[in-house]
Length: 149
Image 1 (tube, helix red, strand yellow):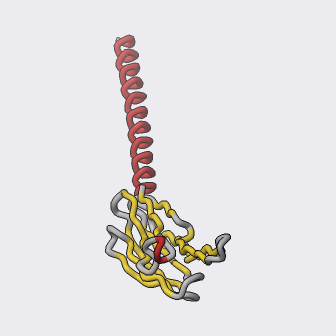
Image 2 (cartoon, one colour):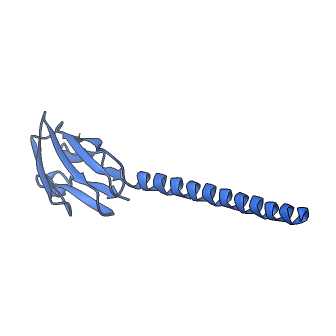
């Protein structure tokens, strides 16, 4: 009868050890899933600063040429991120613009800061285009890129 009690206790201890392992593994997997979800869904709003810039030079024959740009020219954001784009007008009197595919329009004026906000819900490359400088004939193209990964 004593050997029977010992065998039962060994099975009980084995079952207890297996149960502890299962609880530990479940807890670790649960915490890992929560941290991955938290990384994928940022909280708050990310602020990105841009400026309008101008490049100007004179060619050998005395002709003055210039080009306007967004700086930085490419901005990278994460999918799911809330973004506040703050654009300071440094060069050029005004830059009416659109961000294609985001239904965002605005105007940047010299000496002023224009702010637009968006939620980066879909991956892709979105162009920010100035209507004053759309091509080389108009001292452009003044086109920047917002890359959502």
